[in-house]
Length: 120
Image (spheres, rainbow, N blue to C red):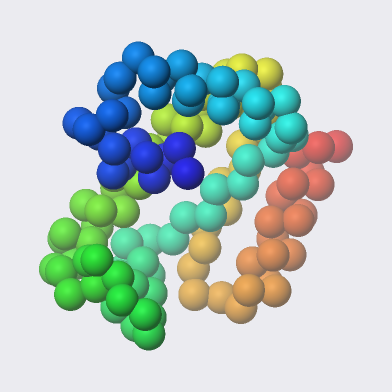
């Protein structure tokens, strides 16, 4: 959610002192609860396909490949910022897992193996 707020709140409220204080308290609270943050990331071509093929509406569904890639990059930057802030607080680990076009159970198995390796 903090990443989403960075992407859509930039210029509106994300730079305000009260938001920054709230975000810091939120990061500290989450860092105290988390051992690992898992980031699933897919190549832009996969994201473009997923956005365009979904049945429900999406704000960029009919935009160009380049515009969808730019949208994805804004989120990647926001995720990197938030995850870095959490891991800097107490050493919470990060696991990044490439998410191609594979079955959900296969992806889940890769995530579980990765988390187990980080925590042993």
